[in-house]
Image (cartoon, rainbow, N blue to C red; front, side, top):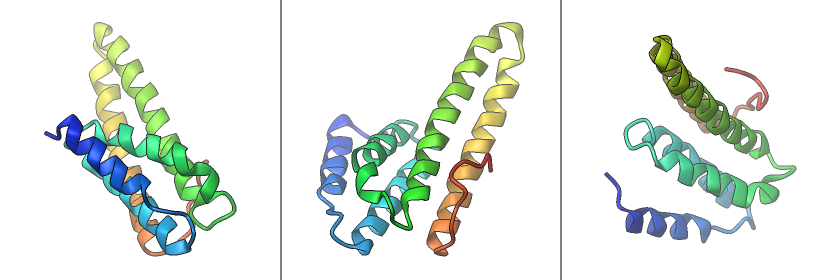
Length: 129
């Protein structure tokens, strides 16, 4: 597992990226996608990713990557809400099914979004898939 020091160092490195050019924004977006995918195993990296997305969101406005940032932010919050609902409903037995479904949905969105990003394809930021 990653230590807090490692995460802070990683965030310091990625937050040092500037938004002066499309390459930097592209690299920044790629790092956030990688953090989301890493969260499948590590968990906490998606929190770092969503914080990074919020910090630089204004810099992405009007760029080809703006929809990807919105997509990533929505993925985080919808997943978190789904996991919390699943945790509450686990008392009556259906929570585990909800948690598994949300996990599969999170994995799908993270990987599908990264593939579209890598192929320079647009993404529907407000879509469910």
